[in-house]
Structure formats: C-alpha cells, structure tokens
Image (cartoon, rainbow, N blue to C red; front, side):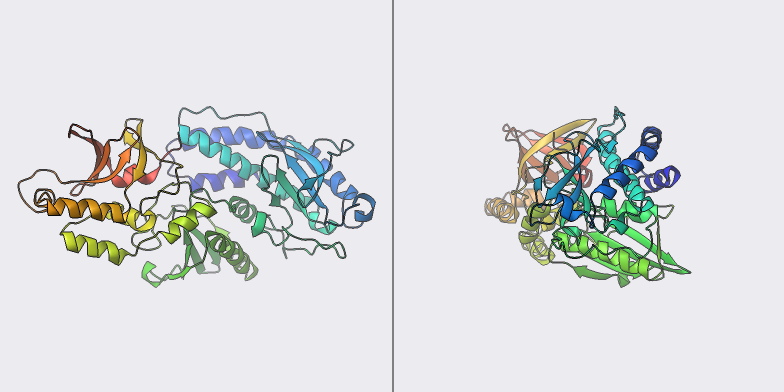
Amino acid sequence: MKKELLEIIKRKYQNLIDLKELIIFLEEFIDGLDEQHQSTKNKFEILLKKYNFQTIPGFSEYPEYPYVTLFKGVDSWTLCPVIDYEGGVGDMDEEIGIVFNEPELYPSFDNEELEDLTWSLKTQIILTWLSSIWFEIDGPSYGIVVKTLENNSASGFIFNDLAWDDLSIFNHFNDKSKPVDRFFKTIPKILDIYQRVSLETYPVYPYLNKWRYFKKDNLIEEIVSYGNETGKKTSEQSIENLNITKHNTLFDRLKYELDESIKLIERGFIEFLPKKTSNTPIYTGAIETKFHSGQHWYSNEQNNRLDISEIESFEKKYRIKLPFYFKHYLRLFNGRKYNNINLNFSIGNGKYIKVKEFLNYEELETLVSKQANNGIIKSLFKKNNYPEKWLQIGKDDNENKVLINLDSSIVGVQKENGEITPFNITFEEFIKEPKNH
C-alpha cells in the first residue's frame, strides 16, 4: 500500500515545488504506520468481536443505536474505543485500550504551504490505511456501524461506506432489529478508498477545478467539479461537449461525486490518475482560488453571485474593460463581505497585505459613477496619454485603497496622500492562495 499511496500523492501534487521533500517525509510516516499494522489490526478485530450486531443486547442499555467508535484526540490520531449513542459518548474500554497511535513524526518544512498540506495528507493517509485494515478483518461482516469521532467536533468518518458525516448513508442509522448491510460489492482499491476519504463534507477549497478519470477497456469517463457544479464527458469529447449540472448546494455536489464514482465502479470502470494533471476549467471564468469556504459561507456566495451579463452591462455603460480574473472574481464573490477567513494576500517576496474588505458590485458602480460625474472618468478609463488606469477594488487593514490596474491587472495600494504603490503581482496571482494569518 505504501507504494500506491506515494504514487497517488506524486501524481496529485506533481506541480508542487517541494514535492521530493514531501515524499521523503511521507515515506517515513507510512513506514511508522506499517510498524503498527499487526497490533492495530488485532485491536480493531478484538473491538468488533466484543461490540457487534450479535452482542448489542449485552452492551447497549439505551434505545439509541450504538455506534462502535474510535474516539480521536484533539491534536493527534490517538484512537480510543468507545460507544457513541447519537452524540452521547460512553467511557473508553480500558480492557481493549488504545487501538492506534499516530507515529510521532511532525513536519518542519520551511515552506508553510507544504507544512499545511502535510497535516491534511496525514489524515487522508491514516484513514486510507485504517480502512484497508477494516476490509482485511472483514469489518462489514460484524453488521454494525463503525466510525471515528473527533474530540472537538461532531465530525466523523464511517468505515461502512467510507464516507464523512452526512455523506454517509449510515450517519443516522438507528435500527437495532437487523445487521447493517454490506455497502461495497467488492473490496475497493487503494485509490478508491483514498478518494472517498478525501471527500469531506466541509470542503476547504471548493473553487478548484477537480478532474477525476475512470477507464473501462478503451473508454474513459471524465468528471469535473467546481463549487456546486459538475461536468461529465468522455475522453473523445471536447470541453465544449461537457454536460454541466448545477447542484442546489455544495453538499449536493459532493454527494453526486461520491455516488457517481460508485456507479462507474459498479459498471466496471477503474479510476486512475493521469501522468499529467489537467487544469482545464469547467467553463470559461471558473477561476481558481484557495478561498476557505464551507457549506454556510458557500451558500452566501451563491446567493450573492452576479450574472456575467450584469458586469458586461457595467463595462459597456462606463466604457471600461475589467481584467478577466477580477471580472470573474466579482461575478463569483461580489465583495465577499460575509467571510473573513483567508484575507491575507501575497504581494510577492514572501510579503502579504490584509484586505479589510472588497467592494461589492453596488459599491463599485457608485464609485465609478461618481468619478464619471466628476469628469475623472475621462482620465482614468479612456484611451489617452494618461499612463496608468487604476480602479479601487477594496481597502486594506490600514485603510489604504486596494487598486487594480485595468490594463495590466497589477494590484497596488493608494495611501491617503494619493501615492500609488504597485505590487509586482497580477490579480490572478493575488487571489490564488490567500492565507488566514
């Protein structure tokens, strides 16, 4: 499994600058897991022989369904065996003791992005590794729902169908009268497990074009997701033939991806990762940014979203041309005033500025309209000898105006004295990877 996991990560993150450094760390981490394989397998098996559908009457005194649970600590994956009765967690089973301890290996990279990514990958690797053990001991045969549970939240991963929280069909299971059915017809491959483990119900970065590939004989089915939208086509079809579906919510999109992958596998398709990562957008204007955006924030973004025709009418009315990335940022986020996470933006050379707020469409139009009425618009937006055309798009935390150059898309700031400081970075680069600190 080590070889398969490392190959998955190499392909998924092939454009990462410090990929070799990451792989060296993860090799050691997986070795640390494998050293515990037999002991974890034994404990997991003992746990399920003690707590299963047949033994429910012996340990379940409550009417609620008893989930067999591996209780996770706050900072690390130290898993303790408990019974969870719909959120009411019982005492740890001291007789069984700790089922699994995360290897004491911690990333210490100079690259902050790499360090953040490693914490996420460790979780995905651990759950893929534990899930493979679940199938080794034939976990489904015990007829009971088995999951992990986070100490500091209600978030849990359910082994029965390898799904998080409400993405799992077993998350609200409450029937003591019959054993839980097997979900998978065959044992999933490591890539199948990894992809399901990675599909969390709290998607941190929905604004990335994510492609998945499934092959059967000479036919390749491709699925792409972006926000609450999905597209599907065969490899022979062009991007123009993409069948795009808009789902009501971000959760609905995640559920579609989870269900669609199962349907394809049941039809005999095998998922694979191509040697070269595709960065083709689902449609023109599906710009990528690592804005942190969970279900609630994303619904606000949906509700405040603009139609591209509104922005084009704005351009025509004021005879201006907004840079492509800013235009579609405005279309998607319209000021993003309801989410204050990840508002520190790179301005190059390892430096960041914090944006206090972006202007929304109404504020932008008021500003431009006022400039037009004052005659300033002529010097700002029309073709003439004025060397640079700047438009305010927000404010930083020092109350300086955040600007965009309409010709070059370069971002800058303007202080109270009117002095403009341009940064050597375009708006596309500016919003691509904002930080929270």
